[in-house]
Amino acid sequence: MKLRLKRCIALLPLLACATSTHAAISVRDDDGNLVTLAKPAQRIIAMAPHVTELLFAAGGGDKIVGTVSYSDYPEAAKKLPRVGDNRLVDMERVIAMKPDLIVVWLHGSSERQIETLRQLGIPLFHSEPHTLEGIADSMLRLGQLMGTENVAQPAAAEISRQFAALARQYSNRPPVRMFYQVWDKPLYTLNGSSIVSDAMRLCGGVNIFADQKVTAPVVSTEAVLQADPEAIFGTSEKNYGGVNLWRPYATMKAVRNDNLYTLNGELLNRAGPRMVAGTTALCEKLELARQHRKN
Image (cartoon, rainbow, N blue to C red; front, side, top):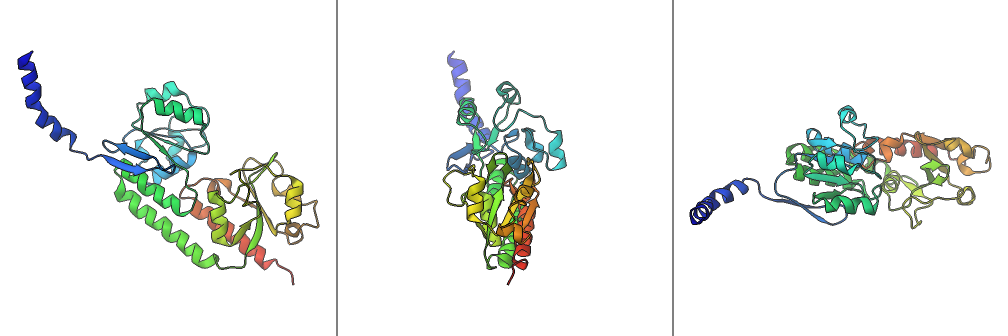
């Protein structure tokens, strides 16, 4: 026993050298929690479509071992194994995948699910950028956790450059009061804290429901009619009638000025790199609404 103990003590310096090969990595997630890894993550589960896109853009596509429903971009993401959706996850499958990092979505994941994941002892990174600037910042932090800074840093810089260019072009344009329709049965919208509202602000749009306390509130048709927005935007996904449901209300300013627009929701509702394209489309439509103003 003493001989074995002496051997273990003798090995301690070697073990210390081995464990110091990788310095610990620590970053803050979008909920302010400190996430620390002993070494760069190699087996990651992405718990939301936008997370999958962020990881790929940050150079970590080959490190994703599992993701959730609707994670369909880029093309390689379609081939990744699914562990459920952003609300209900197969915990046994998660454990079997042996992840060393799970990136969760605060808004989409239930508190119970997050707590269950936390109890597994696997590091969690909460991802929910609330601003366009936060997209590049998220890529940088995820790149740090994956050890892919050489990809994440230039990619994040390019996204920041593109948003800055859009801001220079549109942020000082005359404001347009607008309604953003996420879903029409029931009628969902987004408040001012959402990242989509940040895109509106960059484009010179004014969210008529920005002061709502809930991130994704249900509003009434009467409330929209009373607010009388100059433009109405819907998405191409998950809508029954889309923006066409407003056409019978001929006295609405948005209808009178022919400012009913449909956008690709995947480009605008996912807080990932493709929001550059989604924000560009929003800005262009708002500029068209300005051109429709009648003297």
